[in-house]
Image (tube, rainbow, N blue to C red; front, side, top):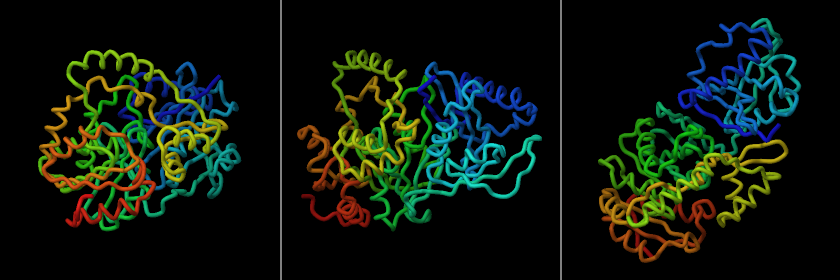
Length: 436
């Protein structure tokens, strides 16, 4: 049976059905199979955890694990695979996905002793002697951190209803910048740019459904306007009264609307390859809604394909949007996870759906005209093929805008970060120079 797909969600985001089936699986494995008492199995700690869930081809839960993401190192537990599938490789796929969620941070677990060799093959190391837990021999095992970016720190942004993964650079007491990535990208979009802004505390988030952040519930949607609300919620959770916002592509559209409805918290707005969201004429709304309902019905039940290896996934990403190979590798180190002998993109397939309702162009321009903060707009000369008339008119709406065009493609900030950082640093200190 297979292939298998994996998701991870905080306890608060689990649907009733997911929680029910998850607990049934654990009861079958631990209480029935291993004779652990129900009182020990249900320890009251699940609400504190992110839960990894594996589904088979019939969408039945066949594997699970829980992670205490606030612990340092991350504490892993309740690793369970359906008794019908043990020995079939599901556990290995489960642990590969657990490692994906760990995002390079160190981990610790209390493992059943007979599984020591198996965990060792997955990069875990034994520490200490065998001990009894629930009358079963256990050993402590650890997995060292392997984060690729030494200067970055993996953090969790707790919104209450969701816990989002993020990467942070710099001194938390420095002026903060909230960095927002593009569609189907992730926080690694800023891996090469953020370290070049050392005078600021840069926090790049994985939007819901992207990177290491959990997918939204099966019945939930990804509405563009929700990203704007999420942006301010993240700033609230980080305790920021004042901050600047930096966005690329879709993230630039989000940042544009944030700045347009800001009540004075945003100090500077930096937009790369984007100014406002996509718009549609009012007369097209019914047809667009019809199209979205059809397309989203398919996306809701889609499973992303498996690529033969990481190099194949990188090639596919480059084909989808021209960028340097190293840039694609950086994005996919955070945006894929192993599946059997191959890899799969980790974003929620529902993200490939279509917006049910878009703003009219007049609404977009109203937001742009309401921006109070200074705006830096960086365009790539070989980037997205924006409608030049529309873009010129949008720029004219912004009260205080500086526009630069730089050599490069749509991911110019990843491909040539030094040139982008030079313009951003000058803008942040108030030296905008001349807009070419």
